[in-house]
Length: 376
Image (cartoon, rainbow, N blue to C red; front, side, top):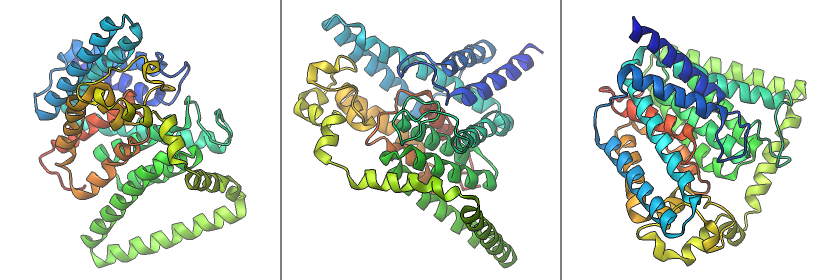
């Protein structure tokens, strides 16, 4: 009876955690409301099940990464007598606990994933798009829309990760396709150039997935699918030209203009790439994630991969890359391509700190460990 009650509580907390992730009340790097809910979920999972998970290669690699990164940060915290490094360590410990609790939940509640994970994920995308079209939310970097996030890039990264979660653990193709369409809208209105990489590879994967689905169905179903597609497309075009919604597509023009105006040298300086390369010696064992003023950086390095290499050296990058590769390689090709979207996005933006990335990683883990790995 007690375990049944705790199971329901954990499902409710997970639903709430996913629903609240898009609401940033405080500045980036600060504790957000969703983090409190996530911590409550972790505590309930540890109380109810001990959050015990079956040890496997991905989990060992992730634990090794967190352990090594924490050692590097603590080393520089003591060496430079700076607390600036401790924030990164606390975030990693939080994300490690969250990742472990999510896997434990996924393994024990496979029958609840559609209601406690896929549903709030889908509703989060629907809500975010609804906010945009109804004028709710912020334009802190006008004309770029950022909803209730602190930055448009945060919003785009969130959408890509949530879309992948839906594709990895969802069972409804309709929900998956709509989730991609919603993510496309979110990325366009965010005007995030980084998201174009993720969207491109995801679109290839989804096209390949659709081809496999159609080729494996009967001729009758193929014809019905084609007819349905034509009807829906016609209705969409009619709506765009009669509702005035085309005025919103100014966001597309702005995104393309931003992409065409990329100044590689300026971007490298602003994202910390140049400074990292100028201090390449730290890439062997890591410089720690803190005190960027040591290297004349404006802030953190805006890249998952360059950032990890610089902050935690070759060992850190090895652990992270093989942690993700050990899961992605087990997926069917279409899902591999779709799952790469947040990782390609990460070449020019740092997103390893955000909890939504570890929800995505947990979905990767559970999907890659299913005995039947073909696309549903």
